[in-house]
Length: 405
Ligand code: ADP
Ligand code: ASP
Ligand code: MG
Picture (cartoon, rainbow, N blue to C red):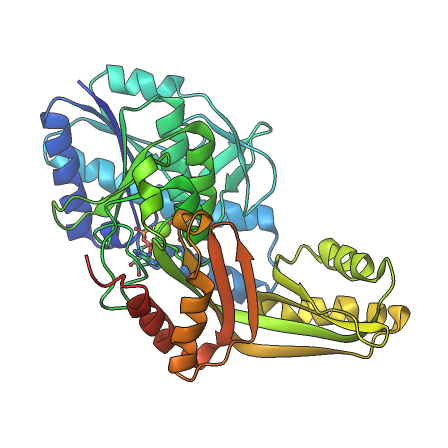
């Protein structure tokens, strides 16, 4: 008998028929002689609707109350899934995050899991139940409801799999696995059979939202092997695991696209110690996440500093830096919206050269201008005009031969 964790995302539980479909799949897994813990998301669109509702009441709702509200999305699904299982003759029990023993810190809307106490889960399993746990939520040690950031049901599944030492963790979604690029952007993208944690982490954190990036970080830290696959068919999915020797032979594993970016350039920054620190310590106090940072070499004693961020954060950044620009004696802050990021990811980049050259050549052949470039050990990323991003992803995908098996 194996202990299996299965997570079903929003689309997979998006209608009553789909919840019944999930229930049948879970029962088949149980009937094959396994113990099953199921983690479910809110029905597709439910979390967005709740956020919209809150904003209609108040433009800046309290984050504590937002968490109380958002957690109801998943709470609806656990009850409906347990009812579906019961109606099909299978013993099942629903549990909120708190009931399942998920203890988090107090950072509302983006809480981190501190600890999982799975006693109740084990007790229900031992009584012959399938246990249905609400994804995306937990509780602080003082008893406040928290949520784990968008896409957080992935994290719930992986953390529970680790806490109960599951034999298998399966993430069921609306695609057959992790693809070489989002198949909605690149129709010729192919399913990847296996990918290592570092590649999955780079792809997830640079826009491939098929997995929440924090969940991949957790899986890497605790060595949780997991599989991403479809809830609509029986096709084998993508295995996400420790790196193996063979994996380095593939230079580029996949591409990620991140839209809704903005670029900020501060011009004529005096070239002396402390100016970059002054700019970025101010930004840090706003809590805005800054992505790429580029500083040019200084000419005539001044330099330009550019960085990127999510475009929704631009007003906060402009407001916070207005006085800093004057204080440090820089010339201006130029903000550009309508840019997007394309990232090329693969652990093979550590041992192969020429990736940047091939990327830039493919973009040049398509007449697409590169606005910024950044690299890490296993990633090369460029900022482009957002209107060109789909074309760019498709030509780069083809240039690296990712559409061929
Ligand atoms: P769920 O609700 O099951 O958590 P998500 O919407 O969070 O599902 O993730 C699945 C979606 O992720 C897919 O429909 C796909 O459009 C998108 N996606 C982005 N990048 C990739 C990728 N590299 N491979 C597969 N899907 C991707
Ligand atoms: N329902 C939450 C969201 O939409 C969590 C999840 O689906 O994983 O972000
Ligand atoms: Mg998701």
